Length: 291
Image 1 (cartoon, rainbow, N blue to C red):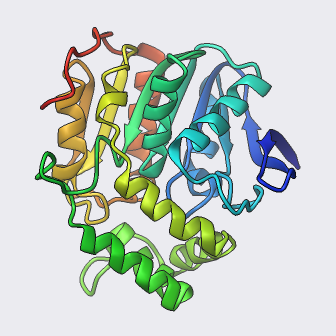
Image 2: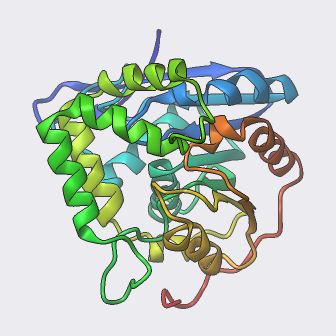
C-alpha cells in the first residue's frame, strides 16, 4: 500500500496518508467528503484515468487507511496534508476536485499556499463558502443541526451513519437512487474512521468560514451542486460560492442529491473531463469578502 508522510502528530508519531495513483497524464487530485474515504470516488477512479489523466485520491487523516490522529482536523492542518500530497508526488498543473468537506480543503489550500502547483479547481457539493448561519451569513444552516449531528454520533455512531447515508443519496420510501448494497458499503467505509475524527470534522466543516479563502482563487474554477441536496443545501453553499466566484463555471444538477458522484456519476465524469481538458476563464481576485 502507498502512503505519504504528512508531518507528525502531538505524540511525535508519523502521520501517514494512504493514497491511490491511477493512470498517466495531467494530474487530478480527488479529495473525498465526510464521513467517507477515497473509496467514494470509485466511479471516477474507474473512468477518468482512461482519458490521459493521472488521478490521485487519498484518505483524509482519521479516515480510511490513513493515520487516526487525536488532533489535526482543523482546515489549516488538512490543507497542509493536501500540500504534503502534492509536494511528495511532485505534481504540477494539478486539477483539485473537492467534494463536500473536501471543497473546504481546496479553498484553504489555495489561500494558504497561493495555489502552488494548481492549474484549476472544482467544487462538487462543497461546503464553501460558509455553512453556518450567523448574523452576517443569514443563508447558512442553523447551529442546532450540527449540534444534533454530534449528539447522535456520540450516542450511537453506527445508527447515525446508517441514517445519514440515506439522506446523503436522497433515499426515501419513493426514491431509491442507490442500492442497499451501496449504502452498506458506505457504512463500512465510514465506520472504520475514528470516532474523534468523525466528530471533529463536523465542527470543522460547519464552523469554518471560507469566504476570504475564495477571494484568493484566480485559476479556472468549476462549481457543481445538486438542487435537491439536503445535506449541504445549495442555497447555503453552491449559490453563494458561485456569487463569490462570478467567472467560475456553475452547473446545477436538477433533482440531484448530495451524493451525486454516484447518482449522477456519468454526467459528473463528463463535466470533470470537459473542465480538465478545456478549462474556463480565469478571474481577478475579489477586493472584498462581502456578498
